[in-house]
Length: 283
DNA sequence: ATTTCATCCTGGAGGC
DNA sequence: TGCCTCCAGGATGAAA
Image 1 (cartoon, rainbow, N blue to C red):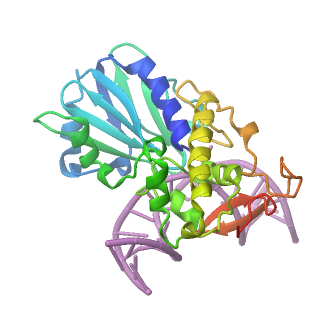
Image 2 (image 1 turned 30 degrees about the vertical axis):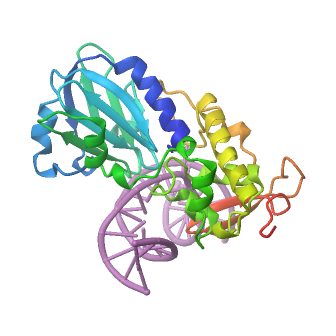
Image 3 (image 1 turned 180 degrees about the vertical axis):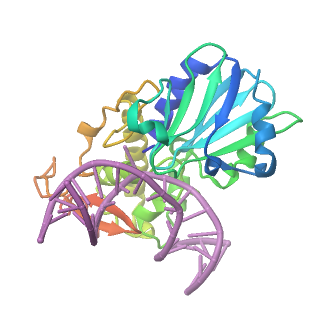
């Protein structure tokens, strides 16, 4: 579910509700959810969260970072269906709750994940945690920059390869935060066919693509992200960007610019939606 | 060194 | 109703 705009909304929602609160306990029901360098002693690390105060809730790429005032951090990767909720999910969904953070006073924070592709890193550094250490510990050093931190020039340089633009934009080690929805939408906005080779993009189109990526992400953030099936913010609300989508999941429907039916192809194992008229393969 | 591919999971939709 | 296949917002380790 979560690409950059969704995670940004989750971070904002959590910040409001849990920043400054004191953790009573963290219950991990599903060990599968644990990842990171301290696997052998994660239970001990978890116990150290008792009494810690939440210092910050931030986002980097599609990952969420919760830091405490006693050198601990949780880095959360939500995978496809990971959801953080400030209210206990009802019914069937209960079996998909994998861990819970209880605070002194309510509400608790519940992690739900139907497909269990999500992961959590527990960063426990007795010498003090700074953001750099957290990033290192959770493999952030391999993550590419945030889209708005890339200059036109650098973006164009990054495109000097023979990969398909679709595959490239999904690669988190080059640019952080984009997933299938926003890649398709950005490529449509920039008039670039998803199967286009990176190195075939003229500089002007490279500039336009970067601008499209940034503006679509920012708009999606302001609309609360996109919900097409599972995504909910911590308050249990859906995103409102779905109705703004121009190509994603609109196979066969008329292009909003030229009425040509939207096509779907599979590239790099992911479905890609595009308008063959507005997004040409060659310039 | 880079890049592709199968794989990790569950559930919902649609065909027969 | 049941059974089958296909599909889904992601990331990764092994293999090429």
